[in-house]
Length: 115
Length: 117
Image (tube, rainbow over all chains, first blue to last red; front, side, top):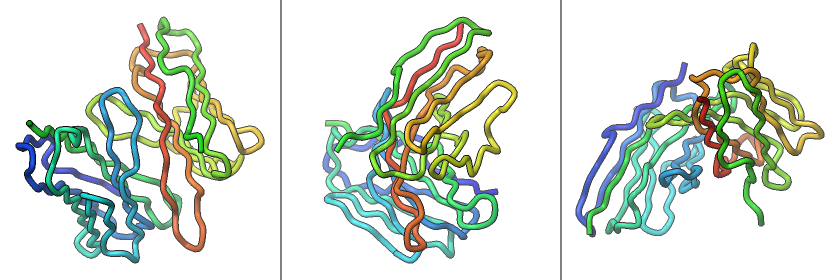
């Protein structure tokens, strides 16, 4: 059974700081890993999708990396802004057997960027 | 392009009452997901459809929950009867699905916040 862990559960940083959010998973047989952002009371917004054959993806100030062999992904946010304050979740889509295509989510890291 | 649409956004009911949630996925998306999200936790899959076929419903409490996706487009999730523990946010997501050996991005709707009193 796939398990996804995100540490830390909460993070507070001053504006302008570069930061890294972590995601680890137990089963490396995955189709992809997706990072999401969730604002309070809202649905999830897709940030980046990394396919299993890729090592990283970039969008603006965001860069996500994937190391399947170690079961880890990181989301790097450059020059953080107060508007980046939200909960960030990662999800992995499993590859085999009855779980093929099933996404397992971590519980997220709640980020607060202070002005 | 319209995103995933869900209704209602909020629902408050008494326990033992029935409730239904509706989801309209992004046009052309073959895969539709229903998730349950409790406060402070990540979404948990309830059911996944590929077109009109439920391919993964192992986490759906079938004694009280049911779902359908007629014609492979819109979907409805029903709870009957609702229990106090069903209070949560119910999220719908859609995806183009499996193509060329890759699963594509999931796109989420705003969710329905259910409160059972």
